[in-house]
Amino acid sequence: SVTGVQTCALPIFAGDCVILDALAKAGLLTKVKIIFVDTYTLFPETVAFLHEVEQHYGFKALVYHAKGIETQQEYDSKYRSIHFDSAGNLQQDQITPYDTLCKVEPLNRAIEEYKSECWINGRRRDHGDMRASLSVWEGGKLNPLAMWSFEDCWLYLRRNNVPYHPLHDVGYASLGDKHSTIKVANDKWMLYKGELPGRFVGLNNA
Image (cartoon, rainbow, N blue to C red; front, side, top):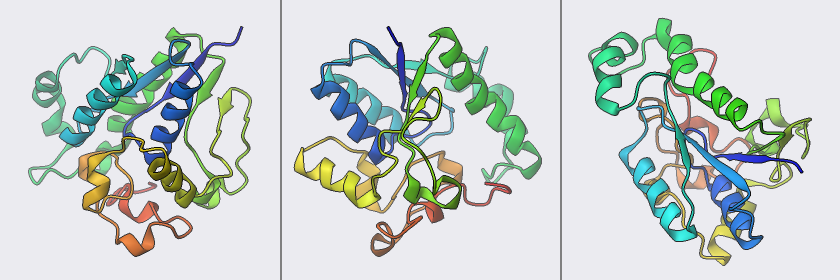
């Protein structure tokens, strides 16, 4: 049998919510591990929303975070003043160290620990040029929404009354780390790469 992991890594995207709902309807939430990477720099609403969907669908996510850093307070004490300046901006020379500690290593560790042969994620072709030729299956990565548009995701969420991140309703097209995520005008959301202007703001090589 093939073991599966769906990553609701970093934020919980609209697409992640589509996949989560589809897995629940198919009765697969007892077979697919739901991984959530807490970077310790998420919007508070993101963590609260995770608990909401856990209760709604009756599952418990596996939460991963920086190795050896067990609490928000510990991260703040050890790393916040290193990664961020006094204004709360991620320092340019800390982008790679931050990403490695808080995002890359936790995700890789999760996939390795569960020996996943199938990483299910919400990447889509309309995210931008680098994903324009994205396949549904990429040798270990399943991209079930590869051919979907952002509008398709929202049509599914609305028609099926699927819970979605509350900050979408106040202008955030996509949710990531609080320090690099901004609102996007609603009339831009459904355009090609419409979510991208709201993500990775102020970061080199985003």
